[in-house]
Amino acid sequence: MPLSLAISVLLFLQWPLRDGVGAWSTQANDLAQALFALYVAVALRHAGARKAHLIARPDLAPLQAAAAWRRIGAPPCVLPWALTILVASGPQVWRSVLTLESFPESLNPGYFAIKIALFLMALMLGLQALLDLASALRRASD
Image (cartoon, rainbow, N blue to C red; front, top):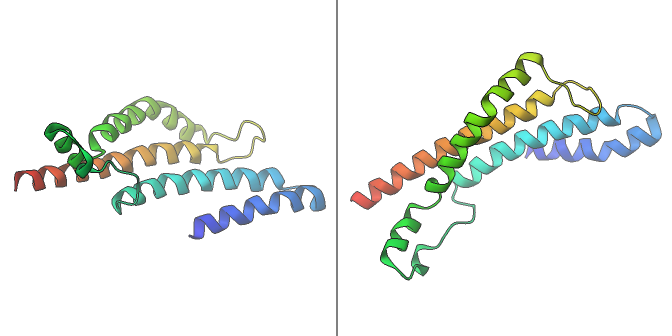
């Protein structure tokens, strides 16, 4: 909630800052972008942990094998995706952090935070998928 409120305030302030003050609107926009990236990274994992995301319904599966896969849920899809993102983005995120990369349009510092949020999102979703998979396999063996 605090992140979404801060994002809303910063996005709202862009116009008064640009039209009234004549300065700081790009800084407000850049900070809002960085906060939004962090918000999405955390919110996706949080929704998955609370089972608040869209999921396949195992009771609608016509075949027994399909029903078994649907009971396992998203981890077989999320894990390869998360691993791919972590491996592919790792070096780029590391370089961005080392150089404290700035936003390309405004040259304001902080663009590296968006890349950290990408890595954090993939890491958290991957870990959550591992926990969900372990839980589903434990339930299946009981």
